[in-house]
Amino acid sequence: MRAPPTLFDLSARRQRQARAAAAPEFLDNAAIAEIEERLGEVNRTFLAPAIIGPRALFWRDALGLDATLLPEAETLDLAPAAQDLVLHALSLHAANDPVGQLVQMRRALRPDGLMLAVAVGGATLTELRTALAAAESEVLGGLSPRVAPMADLRDLGGLLQRAGFALPVADAVTLRLTYPDLDRLFEDLRGLGETNVLTARHRATPPRRLFRRAAELYRERFALPDGRLPATVELLFLTGWAPAANQPQPLRPGSARHRFADALNTREWSAGEPPGD
Image 1 (cartoon, rainbow, N blue to C red):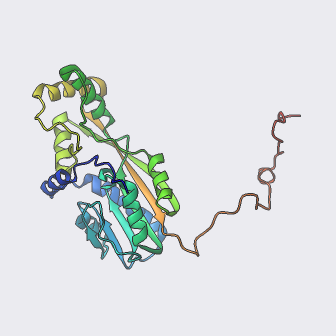
Image 2: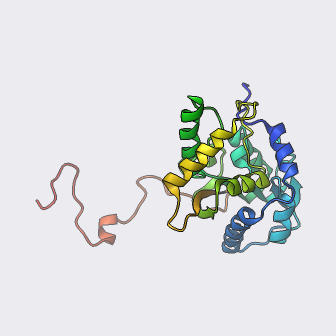
Image 3: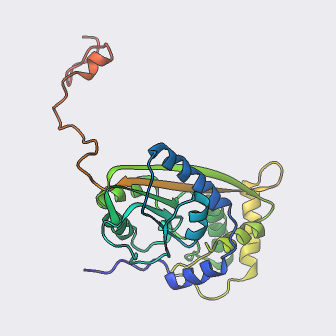
């Protein structure tokens, strides 16, 4: 089997996450609030949960779960059918093989067990991406890998089906943050351990004028009326269940007993028949 591409340098990511042990909590808190709401809707007591991610301990304490904690890893230390709940806590976007992560979580779930994953989505930091790309073109005459590519909602929804989850759902929440300047945004990214760990990143220290120009372009193009700089963060939430015989099943095509047109109290038009005839 061919190994998945190593888009991310996971050794560098672990080092930066370790340095970010006292990370800002705003992003985790926003994600946890959404997870709490989803768990409340399920209305089930989970007896064997597991949490995966660099701040799994923070998540465990915030959610009040007696959970097994696992670090980020290509191979997750999960036994087959051992968990009734698995949470992937804000790290799926940094996996070299996200499908593999989802498959491992599905295999670790007991029948009718629940998987919830939170990942950073493709709309995240669109303002920063734009400013950095424009500044690099001006200052260095080309582009280099500085901001990681991120999946969109449709892509990740498709991955749930590929991984074999039942009743898959993917949805998004968008956060609108503001900063006094670009340095403060970079400070938060370093604090979160979410700086550039792309395998293809340039290892040389970039010239200071690059980031000075990026800050100027960011302000010119995106500054709000009060002078603060907006930063978009998109959180993607993936929900899937391990297949079980007692789950709702889709009807076979053609098995409906009532016409949709009758339910709407309207006339059904044949294919090719112009309405009104």
